[in-house]
Length: 194
Image (cartoon, rainbow, N blue to C red; front, side, top):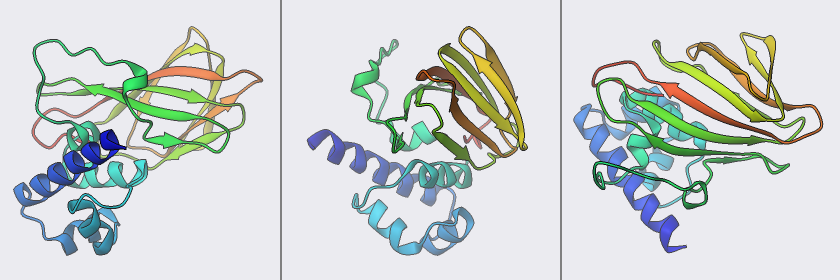
């Protein structure tokens, strides 16, 4: 519980700092991100429990990555992150989950995610800002990737890439759990977001 409280304090600090850097009021950020002012006030006070969709909308609106909202100060030149050390940002009713492992630094950051999709369970993602490119590499099982309502099967050993600014959904397919590594390539510059 202490780790969750510390993570929420980090998100609260980072959201407020990014909002102030962008010169946005709580009302304006809420309007642009489609998040209620009450939810933003609670978040900036390190209260509540923001879900992945809310964090993505805030990051997109603030022009930063999701992990920039979640990460504290850098810890050194090499960062090693174990999957069980990172809380899932999304969990499905059947046991699916998504964990944001880390984001690389630099002018064009890349987010690295680990996903587990149970058969038939899906995560619909809203379109991201222009310039975001997603890549999914299936390491076990099979998934259905829906991009602009077109279905694409991606099996173990296969990798797919697509424009993240279109509507897209990840769905577990087949009879086995699908494991995948997803990278989100953010646009270069200070206005990067995923």
